[in-house]
Length: 170
Image 1 (tube, rainbow, N blue to C red):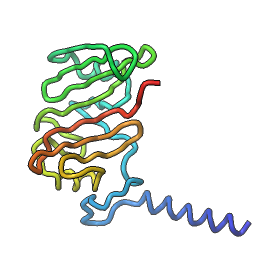
Image 2 (image 1 turned 60 degrees about the horizontal axis):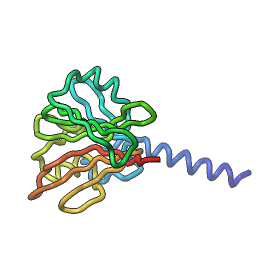
Image 3 (image 1 turned 135 degrees about the horizontal axis):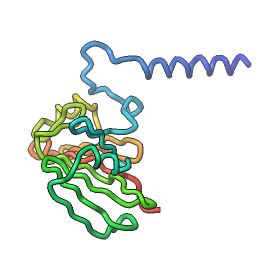
Image 4 (image 1 turned 180 degrees about the vertical axis):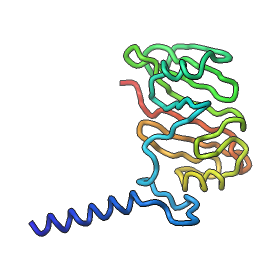
């Protein structure tokens, strides 16, 4: 019985430590995997776009795309559809009759992640916003639940930002 109380107190302390705010001057560089969000979400004009989320409400909020393409999916049953909104695009997949977000690609510096990172910023800016991710000088990935937020670098600056599904065909 005493052993259970000790373990309970230790676990409770760990929960409080994980939920406490970061200290003054913390740049986020020391952010651990456990402290990262389970999902990274892109937002545009008040519309939240999350990977694997239903596209129906997103489409209603964003409105008509600039261009559209569709092709047979090699990863999922049905078609993949790409909705191009100029500065970003959203690719979807079919899941039991529902259209879900497979990928969000940011294309230029007029859009940014909710954490303030956009194309053209430095690798260090990404690390300051998100902490150290998995990768190297050419890319940095941050894993969420069923998705990855991926930054590509060219000459030390962000050249590509993608939110990608890790869900695979059943």
